[in-house]
Image (cartoon, rainbow, N blue to C red; front, side, top):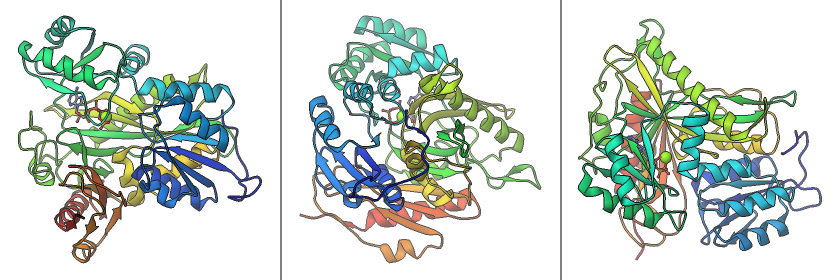
Length: 464
Ligand SMILES: Nc1ncnc2c1ncn2[C@@H]1O[C@H](COP(=O)(O)OP(=O)(O)OP(=O)(O)O)[C@@H](O)[C@H]1O
Ligand SMILES: [Mg+2]
């Protein structure tokens, strides 16, 4: 485990402090920027040249990170103080071996291995940590899967044991669709066993990411801190919009300042007009949330995240791991305002929906992560302002070097800023940038972020 740290060296010279990022996308870019601000020598690794984080790092390696030998060759040469996984597609057995050799893998190698395996993670969360989830079953062949789906109830969602970004997942409405769902999940599992998972659908009102942070406090004790929950929505499997706080309570009225803009509601459908056929529409859309409901949601978020993180990195009563965890949760509020929060999954790294913290917190999720994994103390996390983030997606496949227009109009919206990731090539729905907006309310921030993001999307010129 990384010891408590009180000093940092000079990059590129003897005694430097070194961070090595496995995965160099937009989250990695933010981590690299924060590492550079601290004077940390920063090395990136990814499967292609010139990814976003490499553009702000000292050095970059292009390798296949699922190849354990390649991974070990780079890491043993660089001997970083902290190895920071930014994606899931990494050879986690190599990470376990490197940890045995004395390297520090954030938050711990075991956590990176369990969290990429949906079956191991579901067992740990639902059966060991005892947090609420939708009903689920595991199945080894199409016949077992049919029985499992019937037990869980249709419609349900079948997922590959190892996958991300929604790949290998399908919604199944009846027994006749089970075989195909099994094949889709199997193909995506990349040889990771025959087993798949099926889950009952949670017709949530909105989703939350709780960015639980395991870190040293200034006295050198490892503790877990809880930034304010981030609300988010997607339509398909991709992240589309997030905001923080998840609801802003007006203390005078005891109600949310603005009505909830929930799953399938009018705002959600204008944020993502490409996906009109949603499975359900939230019945809480347009309603104001009470302070009591909001407090209860928050309480459940922290409790679930804490229990799962403790199972992932706890050893006896102590914590043996450092870094941020994106704990994905579903929120369902009943007619009487009573909420239930369900655990979906957790990833031991900054979360895409958490990029909103760049605008809303004193320390972004990336700043928190690099500080935590280097063993530096964190004395508190502050939410400075309500804000929202909205993705900027590519509409074209296989184009190179896009340029981004409409900037004067997007940046003309007060409170808006824009992140352009600098990805060299495109595919349909690839995330190329992010519009961030701050305001005195989350609804206004969401409207501004949406306007800016849609302007940017309309202004992309694709190279030929
Ligand atoms: N049981 C469920 N009930 C309702 N919606 C679900 C369920 N499982 C997944 N979803 C929806 O699909 C999204 C992606 O699911 P999940 O997190 O399991 O997939 P993933 O492949 O890991 O995606 P990502 O890598 O983007 O997190 C969820 O955020 C949610 O919107
Ligand atoms: Mg997910």
